[in-house]
Length: 260
Image 1 (cartoon, one colour):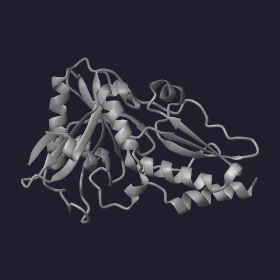
Image 2 (cartoon, one colour; image 1 turned 60 degrees about the vertical axis):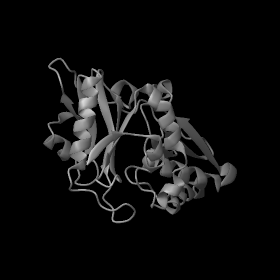
Image 3 (cartoon, one colour; image 1 turned 90 degrees about the vertical axis):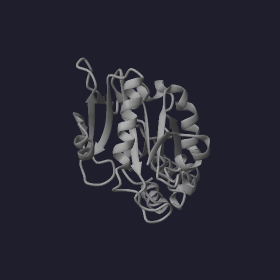
């Protein structure tokens, strides 16, 4: 295998997280492409791993923690690391050491850029982005929120541990209306899919529903809210994890409309 930096010929594959085959990706819009072109000037780094035939099997994206949605300094933060594991599309590349190769390459790159350590987020449950996987590679706990663990690996003794940025103020509703407030950063297609579906569903109810988009690629906006991504209906967060279906989001909005 070979770990390489993202090149123009692989950008479309990267923008859909290697899942060109997925019908869900049709709902993701161009948000990740827009995010990438904005954040590559803020230090974003992307590496891909290729198999012996030159096919992309996995990816990692990371950036200076100061440009992320996590609080810290002099560290790099891994937004995600993903080795394609579906039978559909390009096939299953997991179990070949590609994830370990990507992580090692990113850490070496971060060290070379003067970082004092590497941070990442992981889940305590045994599915995607497992915190336990990072711990096998020398990471330790730094912070926790629900099932999301923030882990890190210091490279030097004077490195400072990171911590989660938490929601700083409530998301208010709109009197006499149903409010759908969608925070959008763009880095994750799963979040982008939920955003687009929520926007489309809200528009079906006309003036009874107020849809508000909040762009958290603006550092001041993120600092104000402490929220990077999320859809709130009448001030309540309704999505976490895999994207909700359009039918589910529409039903949630409809229930609130019926109570007006």
